[in-house]
Length: 114
Picture 1: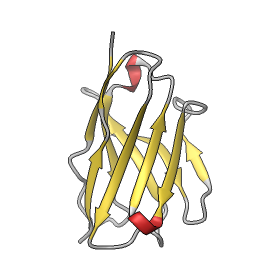
Picture 2 (picture 1 turned 180 degrees about the vertical axis):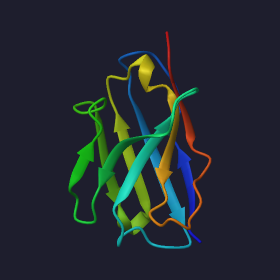
Picture 3 (picture 1 turned 135 degrees about the vertical axis):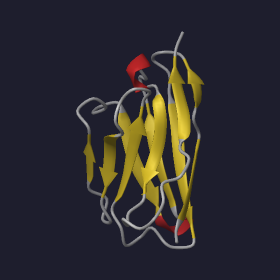
Picture 4 (picture 1 turned 60 degrees about the vertical axis):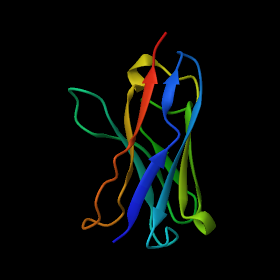
């Protein structure tokens, strides 16, 4: 099975930026569309961004214009550049497994606070 490791989270002030990475081992990203999801305390896990195998992207309305998803297939890595962060962006961010039988990783915590 593919193993996912998310990284790059941290504590940032409102208006700040973070760049998240999701690296896979045991397989190759290139044949799958990939997604970032996030989950805040007391809320369901929600879609954040999608990137297709050929680079087409889609974003949740809440992050449009602020977040950018990208991928490096040679490195089996998915990225999420997050700008103009808001307190409501506080959540654990996950790289969604592209196959239903793969497990979710532990995610990376993003905290936006003064």
